[in-house]
Length: 387
Image (cartoon, rainbow, N blue to C red; front, side):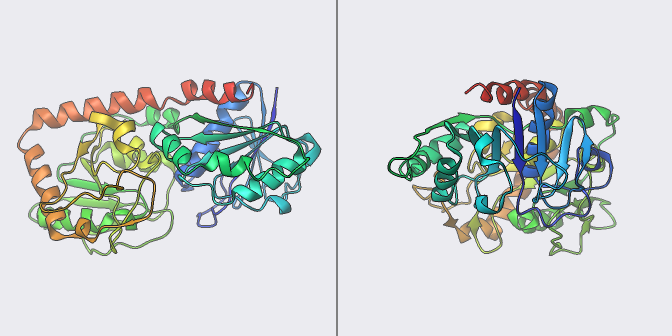
């Protein structure tokens, strides 16, 4: 059995101590990265591996669901690990107080489509004399783009002459859902004319709110509601939005269970396009039967197929040839009034077809709960230990 250390960085915007139970029912809100690492560690622990998560907003020595939590100094934790799993943006290897002679493999979890510091990965791999660097993509789109960007090559070509040679391989493992929390949510009646935005607000929350107001659902006569959850602490740009800040999965999923729509354009107010490698917010919404409307950006179309209602590009928008690629892009046309009008038209079309709405919900729920079952994905994570 392997000893595995997961390191989470850039999680300074949290509202309390993070562990397997607090993020489920203890009021603590986390990012998709936090959640996916916790699920992976829990599943590996069920397979008999020793798993430890190091990060900010953890209480050293806490053990929940077989996983030990500690800080970035590894306070109270062992120093010898066979496998080190870090996010693709991690670069602080030199400050990690780990026994380098014990590390046999490095796992790079690519929640983002780029590895920020391939040279730093290579230096640490050489210092530890590892045999494998495993790049973990969340989708085939992400793996394809990582290959196009030659990330693996960049890591391999940083090998120092005369030092240990290691292999670089890539695999695809999507993020999992906390299905135990999904199943604990009692069936609820959908509240008519409701929306939710539980992603980082700048990823299109302004467009969703504009559509909500254009529908007139914010008025007292219509009696609609728009709920916002944002672990970064952002505030909405609309008085029609009820801002709840950050919360745990049980509270969030209860809200999703009674909400009708999640509009997720993935476009920032300045026109920058966000391209998800997975989008936990979409998986959670689908799992709870929320109708998701989104542009087919990044890995979304591959991962969600007909579980999502796809938005049309606004009239006159010329789709850039590299829109399907992993790159930073600026498309101000995607923040226009025409986009809001398109969202409104799509929702009105659905509102006139209640049978279509029911079928869409059922299709989304079945897909998300099957495709992102943590137990099935846990087998893939366990298989990694043998690579």
